[in-house]
Amino acid sequence: MSDGRDFDVSKDGSQVRMHRRQSERVAVELGVTMTSESNFYVGFAGNISEGGLFIATHQMVPVGREIDLRFQLPGVDEPVDVKAGVRWQRTAVDYDDGILPGFGVEFLDLDDQTRQRIEDFIADREPIFHPE
Image (cartoon, rainbow, N blue to C red; front, side, top):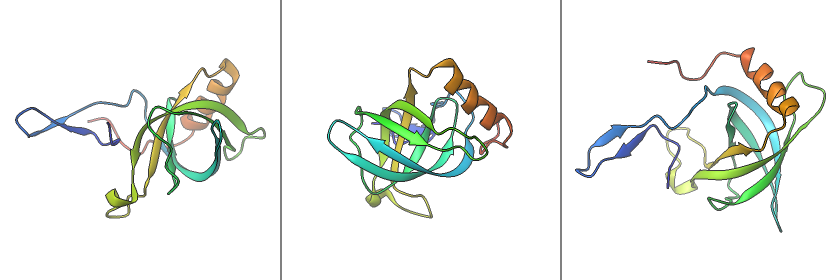
């Protein structure tokens, strides 16, 4: 299971740099509502990319579960409604040095209009991490 960090452990126990993200993330603070087959969750997004976002919450959703998300991008009139898959989680036990518990999701089946709204939002912001 991935924890969203940029390192993995090799067979000999050493850390190996991994490039898991395909697009740059930008910082964002927005409320997110999430629904699954039988649950309703709330959290806030700490960052977003063209491929997904991190949701800070203590209400964990199992890795692999598909959820429906709704969030409002600052400066955008319509809320974003999208299906997403939970790809990794960071529990409260992992909480350290200001890193919040929550989970990362990957957007699934974005329509062209929604993808363009997210891309336009990201294009106007500075990335969190800069390429090496």
